[in-house]
Length: 224
Image 1 (tube, rainbow, N blue to C red):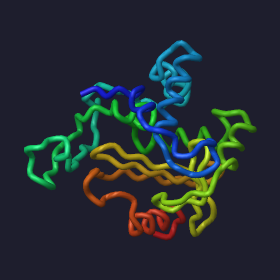
Image 2 (tube, rainbow, N blue to C red; image 1 turned 180 degrees about the vertical axis):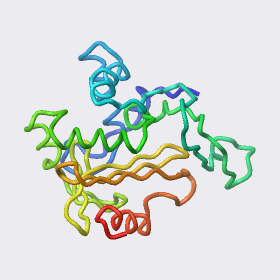
Image 3 (cartoon, rainbow, N blue to C red; image 1 turned 90 degrees about the horizontal axis):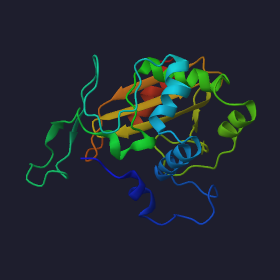
């Protein structure tokens, strides 16, 4: 089933009238950015990602598949309770949904990647290889205080969370699609990095809870 991202972007009203004045995480912003990129470059987002990021950075195990339902090479399988999509299924039934189309996520998270490629991307970003200095500085400092984020962050701005860890500020992001959860932390210069992939189910409490965050933070700070 292919999901129309444009319709999803425009179906709901704004949470507050002035963009950036308060925190409310919204994947709609990434879907709108997709439309802007396609309009400005006259190329779809997949082509832009491949030409501007995947190929130059050597991200050989990263792709933007959208409606494709297969993954090349060795990969982790995803399991999730998707009984809300299957009315006749028993409650709390886990399905192998590795072939789930990521079209719902679109520009907000329809990537297939590896921990190695993800750390390579963050190193390039934080070491100034992707953005001019002023834009990178804005990404990391023009933030608003966050509320209700998991794990707790001190700020969020232009696509990067700022986390307060036991060993100082860290930068990164997490993401979920049915069956998969990925989370990354990085030092300001991209030298300290930790990425985790785990299983995630929309109807189960298997996200980044306090125990996950505590263990992940210890690993990141070298105290595991």
